[in-house]
Image (cartoon, rainbow, N blue to C red; front, side, top):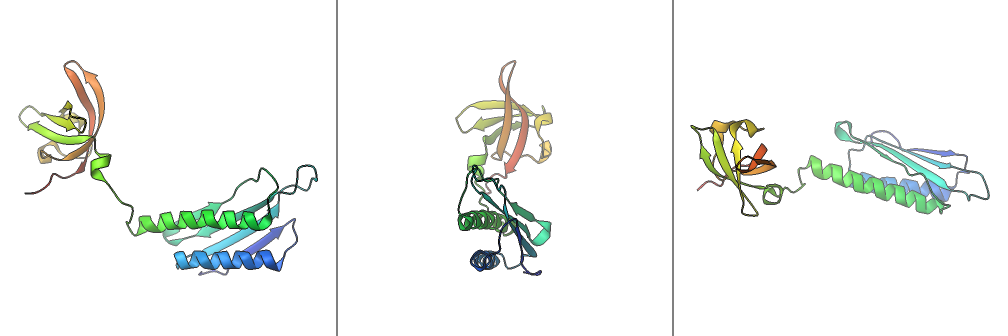
Length: 186
């Protein structure tokens, strides 16, 4: 970490056992993301009433590369073991860091065939219209004005698309067409 680990205890007695657990869990986070800028952990007792139990709250505030901030906190609903709360908070932080690091590395898999609703089947450039063949084998009409992120003249048959569909006068019509994949090149 670029800044030293900060551990704060509020309304609770500081113990070496809990502090050691926090340091161990923070080191594990550093192995996942070696560029952690800072990590601040607050351990506090939420209530002091005997009848309601003595629930603890563990709050973790992490600063990661590119300005990403991860905050983990949960309002306890019942009295839980303090070490269990620490483990829960750090496990949650770990999952969020892994997800963020995968996005940074562009490891999040994209499945255009799953994301797409169909492919461009026919284009009539002079008329400014075309047809999309959906993956459930329906034909959907579209007008050039329905294209959101592509120039109509650059559009090619076979391109994977997502559509928003409505019923037109003569059948299904795409009210918006998002091109999400280029057609295969032969």
